[in-house]
Length: 219
Image (cartoon, rainbow, N blue to C red; front, top):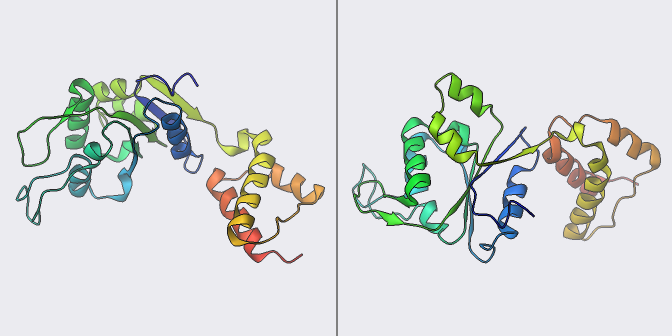
């Protein structure tokens, strides 16, 4: 409620599977940009030579294979929110361009010297220790501080025991309705076992467990 309405850049931290993208979506929905686009980019899913083009776009002929102009995710997120997941995986060239955007609120497509002004809020997420990476020279210190205006840390599910039963009921109901099945009922003993389990895959593992239970339940 405090972070959403602000214009501040947000860094969401936490282990893999803790629900960082859901937090980013909640920040977007609780902001005055909620009617604008929410554009996610999973940085680790793309090689560095494609990631820069994906984020900033490119002009025709900017590099081999660029047969037409491409609008990047920044432009697609204008008047909305750009969510950069796994920000610790981006290379130094992309880091420089992100820093330039945070300082000037403008970008340049690859192969162009034309500046494009944008109204985009940036929310970043990482499961890595960015502060430690800056000390080792693996991540730009100036970019880290520009991104780290507001930090939202998500504890692992093993430290959020009270959330487990709520999440189990939520996902079981969701997948039962999605598949047209009855909602599985968990006995007190089963619930006790699940609440004591460490869930190393966090919310993602619990979600997959619930879908499996709904589809394959046997009484």
